[in-house]
Length: 433
Image (cartoon, rainbow, N blue to C red; front, side):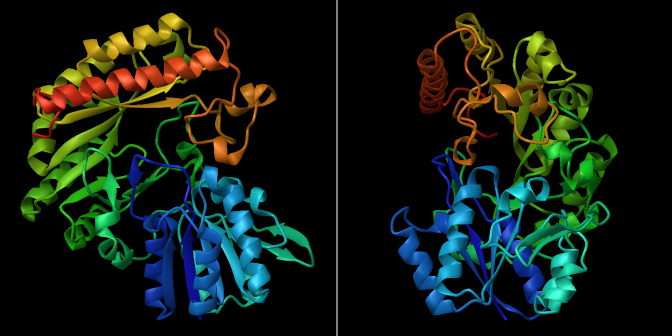
């Protein structure tokens, strides 16, 4: 059987990253000696997409088409599925990925056949092994299937601890020149755990894998790192620095095996402060960037988000990273309840903390997060394509929508202009190392 694996394109000018989820699926298909092709729309110009899709379907002649789903690609996938079904109604169309894991019902359409809702690929392996025989697929855990126009939802299997496959990174290597993270370079992606041990109220990731945080074997993780033919690796766990012992073991393995790569990962501010003595060793192991979930400067909002941190801890974390030549990339939430002064205070906080790399997201309550029920009756224009964290889905409480957007983009402009000036003049804390 031929498998066409598709990552739909969505609006994103900051990065074109490796389609890691599809590469894991490709790894399963390799193990089963099944032919597959990854069609990543990010590797093509954003024109003539329908024409290109039709051409690929006609030339490759897949029997199964699989989509990886993110929150802002729901409508895109459903439309693409209908185009494919019109070309060939016998093609089986499947959906998986982060958004489908919890929001599978958004893909209950006549053009989609199966939805996979587990975090690992065990059920997909069995389905592919049986050439997607309908009777075999309908008996699998973590599968939604359509039968006689009605949808059925099978229970999930046990929380995942591994993918049970090695990613096939052929597509990444062949398209490496198109890969970028603006201002940072070309990163291969690696996932070392599932879900998150914390429970921030705005977070979707901690609800995945049935809310169970589990970690892959470090031996397997380090072996995968050694096999990656790229100097920069982004560990995309929701937070990689969780357990001191696991981080120490990781550092030891990296050093003992003589691995020389640059790493980027997510961290909480409290781990950095509580484990200050580990930071020099992280630097020695190759960590040059940490994406730090600061979220906000204000205790009121920190408490609303259930962050269990404080402004002082965030400032201390930034100081520690700067002292150890690890770039602090601050992740911030701009809340719809912000006042004019809140915008000013956020910028002042960033300057005072000497944080130069910043990413701002407009507060967006996603389905299945703790905060969704609180705001679901106040949502406006809550459409998948707008759930990109740069669109308002809640009416600003202390200013007009126009003024909110103006201040949001002005905050971005000020911070990125400051970064650019400091980068040009090689100010300490702006460049790696």
